[in-house]
Amino acid sequence: MGIVVASTVGLIVWIVLWSLGAKAFDGFMITTVIVLLAATVKMLIPFLPGNAGKSPS
Image (cartoon, rainbow, N blue to C red; front, top):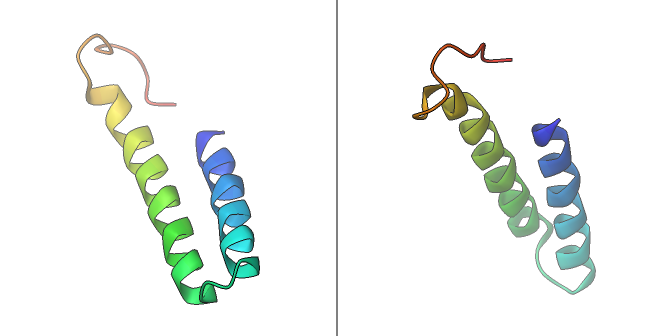
């Protein structure tokens, strides 16, 4: 669910930046960074202290 929210927010940021005159590729790179950060956090959550024994779902 978090990756879907991050993708939506990133695409909104992309459209807003594009409408304000930024290059479309630059706005898309920001979207890519937001989605990669969300995926990284989702993968790292099971390995954080206090989450031992919980399934990574």
